[in-house]
Image (cartoon, rainbow, N blue to C red):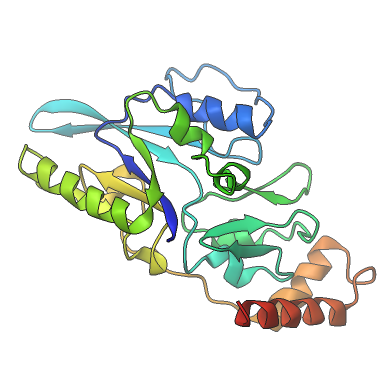
Length: 255
């Protein structure tokens, strides 16, 4: 059965334990930052920061409240990064989306196409990097590092179908207790996401697109311009890339 994570934003207390666990497990370097007058840091995801808790201050009924959301790659079934990648570096590995660092040419198409701003290039002009869903842990029977580290249990890992049922139950509880706009996000968006959210308000209130769409592509034009951008047209013959794409399509068709 497909695996997924369910993030209950109502339970999140913004401790950022998930950020620390992600950095530690994936050996990601710290980022130089400054005090911006908020506990929320660093200011955005990057090639060095693959998961981050976002803070949003909202006012409702004359009262101020905080909304917290764990931001990372959503591992979309219909993944825009996979759709637009000219070399096949961005690919599905089962239900998860990975970027093969050996095949990535740093063209940046995936960065532009991602509706969740979850993919970023290294500096200067490095490869695209993002959350890997701790595939090395998951394939050995462990939960992702962020889920393991979450103190209030706001992050659950397990079978996607079971998590959807759990999420819908939580939405019912929240609607019955003062959150009429509560909803489950990710069940059907982009063919189904593998990071699901229980939201206490509309998606836009949490910085999420209400109706994300998969990016379209002009394969030939993007391949050619991607090679020119990366400066590797002479070093990497076009027919090799076509052959690789055909081999990948053939192997996936046989799975």
